Amino acid sequence: MCRFVLYMGPEITLDVITTRPTNSIIHQSFQSRLRSEPLNGDGFGIAWYVPDVSPEPALFRSIQPAWNNVNLLHLARVSRSPVILAHVRAATEGIGVSKANCHPFTAGRFAFMHNGSVADFGRLKRRISQRLSDETYSWIRGTTDSEHLFALFCDHLLQFQSADETETMANALEATIADVIALPSKVGANGDSCLNLTVSDGTRAVVTRYATGDAESPSLYTSSGRHCVCEDGVCRMVQGGDRPSAVIIASEPLNDEPEWEPVPHKHLLLIHPDRSMQLRGIG
Image (tube, rainbow, N blue to C red; front, side, top):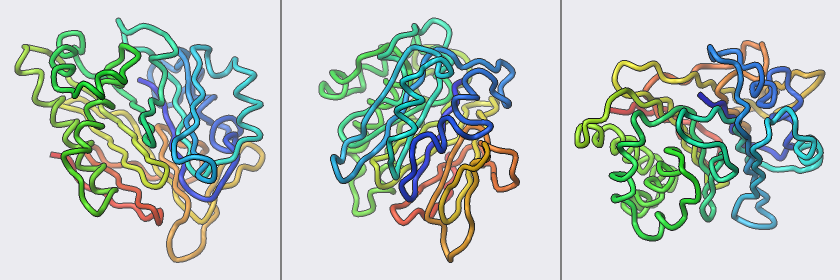
């Protein structure tokens, strides 16, 4: 299983959530606390938004282990963003290590990442590809189940257009999960899929904690507050105000403070443009 973190709120430098916290996403790349196998060294990536420059996210990915990339340290120290997605990868067996297979994946204004795997993906890959439009199929550059899920999501977006764009994204992500649930029976695939998914358009986001069958979904936590600070290796939310203006969603808490709340199993978490959050059950 991989590890990921999403930040939305007032602008911060990327290092506040990627390199400086005691249990930063970089630390989780070599010593994950909540995985039986602590290494996530098969590449990493960061997508971040700079809305004054472009609605589309910037993207930096590498097959180097995150803990060994000096460029990341320098980039994260000076780049600022109100929306950041970061991911460290533990490659699924049989799916190669390449830059094209590193998360996050981007298409237009959307950025997407996945912690988990689609069970028996080798048998499902052709069926998933057949469901894709020519346009989204042409976007796929790698061989991961995750990028194919992102392509499914992009096609479903066109089917669920509504005035509430956060709801549209949530419906499209739920439909993507429904595809993964339905397809195995058609090809005799086996096993349970783990589908912790995150997608953002730079203004809003939807995150899932989900696993099919009796599988235990990967860990997922949330923390919210007025704004985020990192001091002496502790990344924490400053509290105050009527409603949070900053949100972090992470596979593992970035510190040992009691502010982290687990996202319930088999739920969607919608993060609206005003940073209010809404939980919704799946299935």
